Length: 284
Image 1 (cartoon, rainbow, N blue to C red):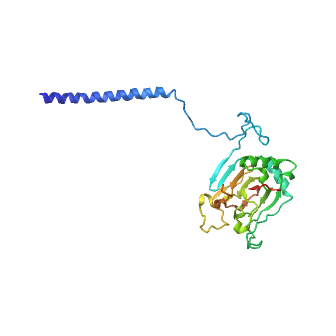
Image 2: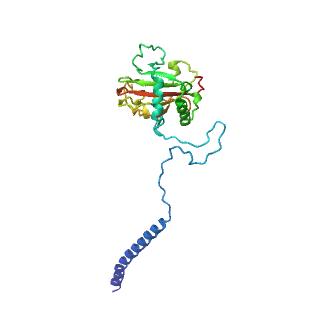
Image 3: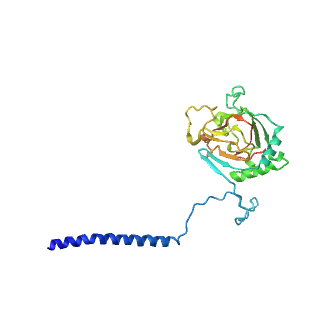
């Protein structure tokens, strides 16, 4: 009889345990719900990328500083090479103004030659037309405005920039993959080096004309890449947009992944203003 009594007590205890666990669960659930109502919800926010005039308190500035904070919209396209995209960097009116200045001055684009190269051996590498224009030559002030904006975006002073190289690519014209920096072993000793390049697209292109980075993220490096191929990271030109990329690492050595080129234009025309920025003050 004693054995039967113990078994009956054990059977009665199991439902009680289940009931108690259920009650504890419900009490805990509703308590956590009530408490969570007083906890602020943190949502990820996009960074403010528009001009911030009037939205932030201005900090004290030096003689060469600016009176108010500003920001310029950007997108990191790549870390290898370091390439940054700036949408709507210039207005359509500013782009058209630069094109008008350059139109009457265009000549076949030249090419810096490596040791042992000649104009005949490099013929067809770069087939665009172009001209160099300094901001001081532009009486409209557009190039000076763009130059100052590039300096703010890059934090590289305008005194280190070369004159704008305004280029036009017509159907079939292109620029095979190349470096903007000059390797001393190939070009001889350099008084200064190109640190970065800023490309401002002055027109849309119907088809083709992309800026390409074939070695993006280290792909194809040392694999016998054909420098005439249009592959890798490709950026389609759009009027007013800009691209900044760095040719050198912070330690001053050349970034192999900064190899880039201009794909052939298939339809339309491509206009672009290039600003090369060096590691020393330029006299131009």
